Image 1 (cartoon, one colour):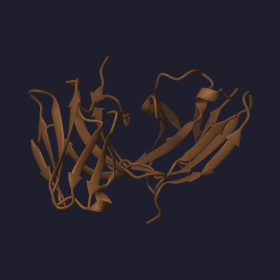
Image 2: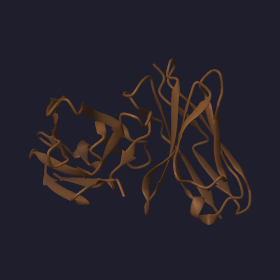
Image 3: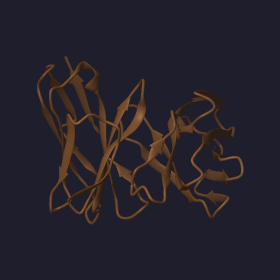
Image 4: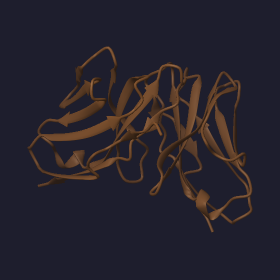
Amino acid sequence: GESVGLHLPTLSVQEGDNSIINCAYSNSASDYFIWYKQESGKGPQFIIDIRSNMDKRQGQRVTVLLNKTVKHLSLQIAATQPGDSAVYFCAENRNNAGNMLTFGGGTRLMVKP
Amino acid sequence: KAGVTQTPRYLIKTRGQQVTLSCSPISGHRSVSWYQQTPGQGLQFLFEYFSETQRNKGNFPGRFSGRQFSNSRSEMNVSTLELGDSALYLCASSLAREGYTFGSGTRLTVV
């Protein structure tokens, strides 16, 4: 079925290094993508989003890349900090699906001091 | 600016009972969506309400229902609770097709 998936369930990085979290989506009708961060005991927190008419979008220490050809999304975190340790989810929204998001399985990012 | 408020934060219910969860969206947000999060299934869409109307519905049984009030606050109800309904129930509000903001969720445990 149509889904959004993640390649790596756990990513361990050294503090100060850059992190890259990947996500594959299968629905070509998706035109809006969001990355969320979820810490233990909390709801998902919005990080950054991107529309399908863009290939790249940058925020504070984060960059999202969208490759529509291979239906791939990535989140890059620069100078990873211990506070970045969390589970990261990608989500997609189709343009005729109202506000229904389809989430990937999540990647746990562990930052080693 | 207040965020999305979900009540209660924690809930323990017995099999067969019913439960009602509440969500107050960000002021001005008319869309409210509900999600179920479990370790096995991840985050799954339950339903979305916009201007008091259900606009989308996920693949959940009819025991799961919801509604939205004129002030955009929303409630979801689960009847005849099963052990498998134990989950974190998340509510998200948005102004349009972006800016989805989640609440902290209601942790439901069915025993």
